[in-house]
Structure formats: C-alpha cells, structure tokens
Amino acid sequence: MYTKDGEQYYVVDAHIALWDARPENQRNVHGKQFIDCFYDYHRNLSPESEVWGYEEYLYQGGERLMRDVFADGIVDHAVFQPARLAEFYHRGFGQTEEAFALAQAHPDKLTYNHYWDPRDGENGLDALRAAAERMHLTGVKLYTADWHGESRGWKLTDPMAQRYLELSQELGIRNIHIHKGPTIRPLDRDAFDVADVDHVATDFPDLTFVVEHCGLPRLEDFCWIATQEPNVVAGLAVAIPFIHTRPRYFAQIMGELLYWLGEDRILFSSDYALWTPRWLVEKFVDFQIPEDMSPEYAPITVAQKKKVLGLNAARLYDLPVPEHLRLPEADETETGPREPAAADLASV
Amino acid sequence: MTAVLPRPATRVDEAAVRAALGTVVDPELDEPITDLGFVRSVAVEDSPDGGAVEVHLRLPTSFCAPNFAWLMVSDAHDAVSAVPGVGRVVVELDDHSDSDLINRGLAAGLGYRGTFGHEAEESLDELRATFVRKAHTAAMERALTALLRADPSADVRAVTLADLPADAAEGLRRRRAALGLPAGDADPVLLREDGTRPDAADAPTVLRRARSVRISVDGNAHFCRGLLTTRYPGSEADQTPRPDDRPLIPLEVR
Image (cartoon, rainbow over all chains, first blue to last red; front, side):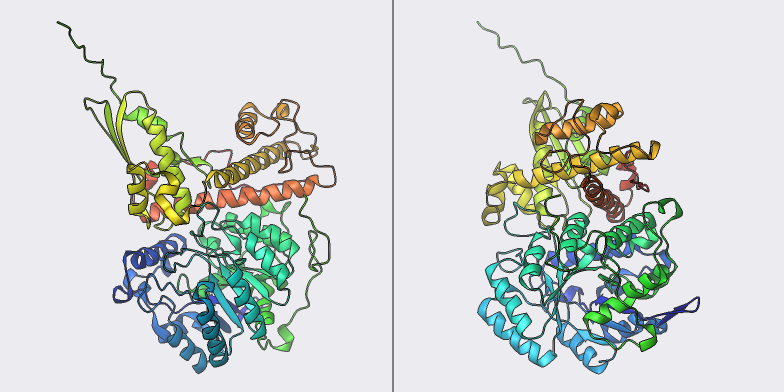
C-alpha cells in the first residue's frame, strides 16, 4: 500500500522476474548480449541514485527480490513473468523453481506465471498440463522472439499456438501476457507487429491479452487493435521508466493509452529487475501531464492512477483489494468499443 | 608501341563517403544513420582500383531487429559503392547478435535471402514500404499540427500541400512519390492510408491515429539515440540533434 497526500494506493507490480544471467549460466555470447542490453536500458532510464552495479544486475536471488520489490511496503502484490531464453542460458533466464518456491512461500504477495512455446509441440502441451496442475497457473508470459533451434520467433496465429491457447483456456490460464521481440519467422515482416494479438483476442474472448510494453515500439498499432478488442490490455513495463528521463514522452504515451483504451485497461509494471518498483510508484503518483499539453490530454486523475497502479491488475488476478479502496469501472472511451459486437473502426 | 595511359585516378575523400551514408535512413526512425550516430568509422585508402572504403556501423543494442539492421547495412553498401572513384567496399556491422551472419552475407554478395536462408521468404520490400507509410503518416501529422498551432481554427481536412511551408510540403511530396500517393499542390495533406481524403466525420480520427504513429516514431528515435550513447560513451558527439520539426511537442488538434 502506498499512501500520499491522504490517498491510499493498492499496488500490483504486474511484471517482475527472478533471472540468472551470471557468466556460469550464459550459454553463448548471446546470453551476455542479452543482459548487457537490459543493463543499458537500466542505466539509460534510471535516476542516478537507482543505478546498480553490473555484477549485482546479473542475479538478485529471492531474498533480495523480496527486499527490492516490497521495499517500504509499497507494493502489495507482484506477478512473475518469466522468459525462458533456453538458447542463451544453460538453465534458462527466468528461474522457474526458485521463483515458484518463492511464490509458494509468499502466496499473499506473489503470483507465479509460467510460459509456453508452441514449438515444443505435443510434449509441450503435456508439460503445460502438468505445470498448470502443480503451479495452479492463472497466467502465462509468452515471448514471441525466443529462439528455439533454427527458429527465432513465432506468431500467436501459428496453428500450434492456437492449440496452446485452447488448452490454456481449458486449464483456467486466463491472463496471456505477450512480449514481442526483434525476431520472427519470416524476417520479411515486422517482428514487433501486434496484428496477431488482434486475431487471437477475437478468437478467445474469455482470455485477457496483456501486451507488454504497451506495444512499444509499435504503440500506434497496439492502440488501434486495443480499441477494437475489449480483452486487450496494456502493460507498462519499459514504458513507465520514461517518466524520469523523458517525462514529456511518457505523458504522450499515457495520454494516448487513456484516450484509446481508457483507464481500466492499463497495468503498472516495473519489469523488475530491469528497474525497481519503489521509485516508479512514487514518481507515477506525483506525475501529471505537463500544463502546456493540457489542451490535448486531460490531467490524470487520482482514481485513474489507483486503477493503473493496482486495481486493474487485481481484477485480472482476483486479488483481495480492501473494500474501501475499490473503484467502479469507467464508461467506454470515445473511441470504444469495449464490447466486440460494437462498431468496427477498421475502415478509418 | 602503344602506351597504356593510366586512368586518371579519382581521389575519393571521406566527406563524399559520409555524404553517401547520409542518404541511408533508419526505416523505423525515419532519420539518416549519420545523424543518429550509427556510423562508427569511415576509412578511405587509395588503391589501383579506386578508393578502398571500409565503413563500420553500430546500433543501440545487440538485438536491434536484424531485418532493419540488414536494410541499413546493405543500403550503406549500395550508397558507398555508387560514389565515383570508389573501388572495393567493406561495410560491417559491429557488436550485433547477427554481426557474423550479416557481415559474411554482405561481403559475399548473398543478398537478403542468401544471407538469412530459411528465415527469409521473399524480400524486405513490404517491410520497407510499411515504414515509408508510417514515416509519411508521421510527417503528415507534424505538418498539420504545426499549422494548427498557428491557426487553431484551421479545417485540417481542407489543407492542401500548397498551404504548407516549402520544406514540410517537400518532405511529404518525397514520401508520397515513393508510395504513389497524390502529391499535387491541390491535393489534401490529410489522407487515409489508401490515399483518399477522409470525410468530415472521420477526419479527427484519422489525425488522431496519425498522431499515435508520430509519437511512436519520435519516441523510438529518442530512446534509440539515448541507448546508443549509453552503449557507446562519447557517441553523442557523432549525433546530430533531431530536427526542429520533430520535437516532442504538445499537440493540439481541434
């Protein structure tokens, strides 16, 4: 719970990881390139006081994670969103067993989401059944640019992915977090394109599709499909740290998301350990659309901040929000529709 | 006895090579790679076959999308090769997850499909066209927003290319030529993707959508520029600030 100026915020960090990128776990040069890329993101966007040393960035472990994520009691609940990256790291990047054990030890504070990959074929479907049973999964994180043998990417519309989505639905895995990356097959196309989310969101109306990084670097494509699919949600991972170095850019991202999606479909995420949640929450609560942008974007209200910081994610994950902190959902956005049967704006 | 006269050697200077590289654009960011600081080094040596040029490029991360990386590296190779007097050309991409693959493929003249093998289906033409369209959409929005800022009561639907300042109109014409969109003086600035003028009811939405494209392109440009300087300390000296017509400005649309 975060309290500021007499307002209480129930906070859910919808995207954290427990990774291991230490040299002994790096399988090849790409393991180093990957964590170096993260570290550059971290250094580029963090306030100076929040920059970590390179060594401590490689691995945090559960104890430190609990300290960092739940520092000062600000974050109430956090959700693991692991990336496998088996081609880059011997034991994978996200540490499944360590994170799952931590979630079991702190069920009130942590939810463990797992991953699946359609290229694991039939065996992967069996593995997903077993994982869902053992881990009581309610969500998964899918990284479409994960490498897998000769393949360096997949789409949600691939036939096998459809089967995994069907099984997810059957197993009660209702939150599908999607993270696009730089590679896809074929390379002819834009790997960051979120058009496949549009298709599966229509085909699986009972699943919720959380597009991480709110579609960045394709914010425009994401906003557009989200207006048409009520079960598509924006995750703010990697977008929210812009609040510090590029607040005017962040203002425009928030302005666009609130305009196209509305306040009920945006989730706060620190992307820990890329960044830590404490400073992000503090800055977000203090944040306002700059005055000279006010003709274009309305100020962000306290209620909207409460929803983004936690209430929206709590709804997706059935988290127990104290009664007095709950808020009603807003009306449709001007661009609607929230209901699939409503108008189709695709012709514009 | 016949004398073989040596061909007069055209000396190639570095400035000419850099000017050629200045025509190569990052398709996602819609800016020359020279302005972005992506050119790490240029070396020119005289040789009997003309100037031997070696260019090294660098990108903000190891995992910048390999298809865009290929476009920039192969465009750079083509641009430098076309400089008069240039003989052997080596263009290499440094520190990228696909550096070996791309550098080998380019050196061997394998082209996109030969370089990426099973991962490449046809070509990158459609990808390139998609981003020329986005660049046009963003430019359209910038032009109209600048105009609206000067005259908030302007009817955006009625604005024609002739109403724009020369440089803004020129930028739109250049992009429209590549896309086959109408580019005459009397043609509207605000277009739907299919090149038609939106009707009055749709115009605000078309402009709103265009704005999200512009924010995306500008935001990516700022992030990529910043990441490059984090990754390569000192590289900010090689960057030219993003032009004044593309600041992260508040936008007012009525």
